[in-house]
Image (cartoon, rainbow, N blue to C red; front, side):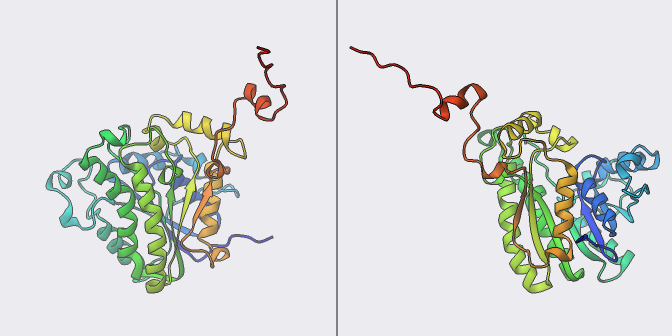
Length: 315
């Protein structure tokens, strides 16, 4: 047996707002492997998330294989759209959904981690963030503001987190982000600049692997997950179609589970993956390998040549 052992390691998972999405699934899996796990949550959804935890509504989602409940070491408010507190507009700072959360910028998150755990608080960073305000709009109908918001929230946030946290990782640390096939292939309906953001995310992962590897000894990878029914994915409006298409066309014709994605992230975060960096790992049942949709059942016989050709006109 070759176990994933993360005992004595501390992870920060940014982008957790419920007990269903990839972020929470990854956090629980890291805890199952022995890591202590801190969570970063967007302030407007953090209150509801805290209430769900306190009221026991997430107890089943938190349950580990031994029966105990996964309990986050810390829960931090963070809006990855802002690098520094001075970048946050006054109307956001005074918005009731943000009031009382302190400095929820990326810099504020890093400073709080250092206050709580010292100058080198982290071994593992997970970036599970993706947001585009115009995700339901085709690219041709996406505004400049919406496009740049998608890139800032979903891709530059990855750069910002590593730039700020990089000097504070312990030796042999790793960082992993979540991507999607739309970053390299056309997925109609996945709009608002999100496909561009995923392409940037994967490109930046390779560059960060070099720069942060040389500067901090940090491994940097991405996991390109197959379509998965989460609350965030539901905002796209086509998630059921994407899941159905994947099931019909992937080499393994079955749905991707949150546990499969989480286990792959845990592997990349462990010493078992010490030689892996700058990589995008596909966890999508092989869908990325397909260059053509699988023919419908009625057409497959024709494609294999098992049906006789049509008769030629004698004339």
